[in-house]
Image (cartoon, rainbow, N blue to C red):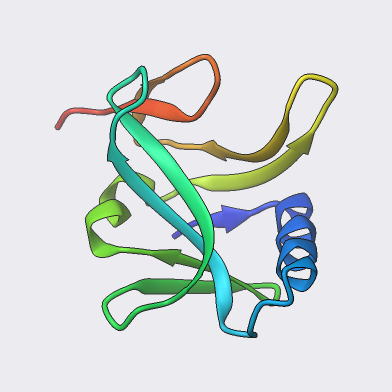
Length: 110
């Protein structure tokens, strides 16, 4: 469904440990209207809810609500730390185009 690079896995593990979060904490990934391209990614540490889809990979969990799932299927999550930017970055095969900062996208039409 979603893949994580080793950099993303290691940073997420570190983030969860730093926050002293409970073991069921994962990265919640959601899509909502907004951003300069129409839809934007929202990420936060959270615990899953009964209706969520949870994917566990290499000891970390990605939590997605059903409404966001169609926009995110097949994504790759990476963690990038460069001189100009640091954070989780998504490569989304469901995006027709993405904004320059990479936080929003225009979904492909059917």
